[in-house]
Every structure is written in C-alpha cells, then in structure tokens.
Image 1: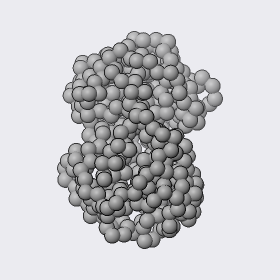
Image 2: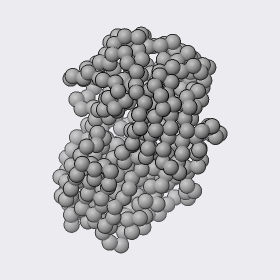
Image 3: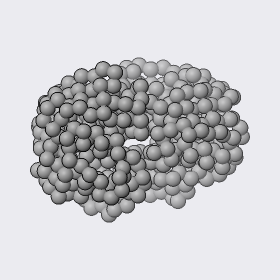
Length: 442
C-alpha cells in the first residue's frame, strides 16, 4: 500500500485506525447464547456518499457518527488533496466539510484510493467537474476491478476521461472541464456504484442529465444515493430505471450517519447461529440500506425478528433451517449467510451473485474454497453456491485481503471450535474495532 502521511484537518491516518493484529486469530466459541446490545459503527456506504455530497454542496456540513476506517480515510485524503476543507474529529465522531458548490480548483493531482470501491467509483464523475487532470489509482486488486461501464457512461455525458493503461482498468485519467449532460446508458450489473457516482455529480452538469440504468431490477444502493441527494436539497426523477437530474446546487446541512447494516449482519448472524439474542439500536425500518434485508433471511431460517423504526432485534432458534435466496440486491451479506449455513438442518442455496466475483476478492470462489477446507460440502455455479450442512472441522480461514471474509467466518468460529482467521487485520477496511466488539458478545 502507498505510504500515508497526515492530512491537515484530518486527525487520523490509515495506520491510526488499525489496531495491532496477529497474523492469525483463533476464534473461541461462545460458552452460551449471547444476550447483548451492540452499537455498530456508521455505515461506510452512507459516510462516503455524505462526504461527496458535502464536498459538492454550498456551505458547511457536519457529518455525525461517520465511519472512521480505511475507506473513509482514503476519500477524505483525496478531498483534502483536491483543496476541499475537511476537518475530521474521531474522538467526537464527526467530520466537518466546507463545500465548494461543485467547484474543484486543484489541478494535476494524483489520487490513491486503496481498495475502496466506493471511493474509486464516486470520485471520477465529481473530478470531471474540476480543472484536471486527475489520476485515480489504487492497490493491485483495484486494478482488477471493473470500471469500463462507468467510463463509458461518463463519456456519453460528455465528460473527458481516459485509461492510463489497460482498457477497462484503473488507473484512470480524468481530464476535467465539466460534464455537458444529456443521456447515458449505464450498466450496473457489475456494480451499482457506477450509477451512484454519476448521479451525485449530475446536478452540476451543464444541462439535465438522465441515466438509463441497466442490468438489475432492484437498486437498493442507488436508493440510498437518491434519498441522500434529496436530503441535501436536490430532486431526482426516477421511473423504471430511468434517473433524471436538472442542474442544481446541493444545500449544506447537518447529517447523521446511521449504523452500518452490513456490519450489523455479523452480530445478527451470531445470535442466529448460537440461539442468542442481539439488539442493534439506531438501525430499523426507516433505514434505506438494502443489506437490512438480511434480517428477512434470518426470519426465514427460523429466527425471531423484531424491528422498530430505530432498532432491530434478532433471536436465534434451537436450530436454523436452510433457505434458498436471491441475494443480488444485498450481496454484501452473502458471505455472512454462507458462514452460518453449515449449521442449518437443511441445505442453503444463494443465487444471482455473480457480481461478487469482482469485489474485494472473488467472493464466490473464496467462500467455496474456504468452506471446503473446513470440510463443508458445497456446489457452485458461475452465479450461485449450494451449501450442504455438516460437521465443520478445524482450520484457518484464508481471507484474501477481504474484510467480509474475515468478519463472516469469525461468526463460524463462535459456533464451533478450532476456526482461525488469517490476516484478521483486513477488517480495518470498514470495521477496525470488529473483533473487540465481537468479544463483547461474551
């Protein structure tokens, strides 16, 4: 990873949010069912959207309960390098941003985004509004992740962007000069982040910008984007995958980030697989996060679920039952379900998740490989995995640098002895304090 230096106004670096981790971490099974209230950090998806919107807004925005982790750091690092006034206070759990009304004066800036997919996909459309040129690059894995659909759509809207090397791969060179607007077809089959990045920059296009989203029927993460754009004062017309935005200016505001639904899934899964009870405050029926649909999967597996407007509670049954579920729209919890499926009374099939092969790791392959190494019988297709319950044997789970592999399979270790996690430090990407909070279940 590139060296990181302190950024004026940002009181932490990537190193600061990384606790010291061993090379391998053995997870000790719980002695009994937990009964706990868990306060999950702020949503990564919401935090990074709020940072982009605040940077583009007119005036001062205070973001409370943001996520302080690798991904949010890289975005703040980029914004400061672009000349935007960002002040982060991790002790007070707030970030202050003085927006520049869609203006980016800095030019000739090289931006490093680590392995943060949201940052890599959200920044280029916003950068197109600036003077340019800007280079966007990340870790080697980022150079393997798709970006062609975003670049193609940017060009359809008139933005000047090109590849620094291989077609369809990072690094990108955003030449800048503005976004004329118009209409663009954009595929979200590989990532809905392309659509969200384009939408957030679109109010500052020269004329109405319309996106024709293709590739999926349900867009929960785009729903988060639309909801937040409206919260910052910009209307989005939407109908059947068509999103239109007229020229407008975001209004700065105070914005509170709700707890991360993806991060909450591990604690709800822990309750499910151990017969315990876990309550998550601050996350409930009013949430726009699609990953909260994981609660419905746990209900189908036999869990008792109670949800109010601002909390969710899950209590596990004596034994889980298997399910067949299409997780395309909330696939960040696919690994969570895979990690507890071996303990069910019947097989579990997860469908329509081919796009997870293009995320922080080839997640379908990684899950299949590690379950097999733990003695679990599985079958896979290019877009699905079928998990047959059985005895989980001891072993160290390889995580492939993927935070969700580490967090999900740690839950497996709560239910059976001998499970270790390789490279547990990869959780700092989105949840530096994860293992400490997991221990609180005891």
